[in-house]
Length: 396
Image (cartoon, rainbow, N blue to C red; front, side, top):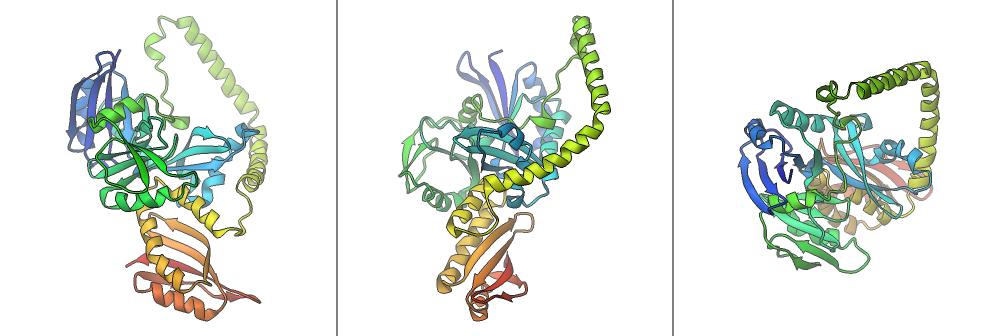
């Protein structure tokens, strides 16, 4: 069937949902609209019918990041992926769903979303009687059109795609300030940007695209999406029931194979426990090989790595804002350096470990930042040539 239904959900059930029915064969919009909230999705059940349904979700609810992962031994290393990203994530890895995307050299893109968020989206669709073919972060449906980046205004948000598997969703107030800063991280010259809205921004070379309906742009782009969140435990189950009578022999073979697989799994459960212990040890070794030592070698390089890992997460805006406010204090106390940063988006809290040459420098820095932050400081420890301490910052 050439007609497809596209729906963009919100992060919470109260947010509105945009939808569009598109005919690939006729290259025209059959119908489109906007629902007040996700509880009204049931009104689209009839439109879904036998059409494939593609779901877009806000990138602000997802962390789009990357890891350095050599192709050699990749299959084994993928099992250790949650542990490789654990330091950069505020939540427990057991509560998160990891989906791998496209690879560029040794850099592998990864999408991370909370199981709770995935289950919310799927429950809204299930309650409405809608079955999704794929679920894709909205910014990754923006066609790059041979540019490095792509951007489009969608309601009160701006969608920005910064690579084949990377991107971010920013509110309108933050987009104009954040885009030039993100662009300066590129070391290969000016950024080329495929623009699907009328944007007035600096630091990039815009290539204006046709100003179509935003949902139509995403509908066309989602067909070439680089990843699908419906993977792993969320992979849709095949519907064998309605075909079982027609293909009885095939169904019996499948059932027998499943029973044998379960029996084999039960007989080898002790081997699985042993392999789990070995995997844990291998995961630690792979993490050290890929990520490197936790000792600080290059503050700027490690900072940029952490910033890239936070692009697309819900707390990205607050994180950048807090760093901006700290810039002046770091300038006035140049001998004071951060050795590690960790941002908790749930608490809107920045925790950083710092080093200085004296207690006075740390006290001076605290005095400067207390004008804009609530500061909790840990104990100060001194060695022969430096003083270290841990500060926890929350915006006033």
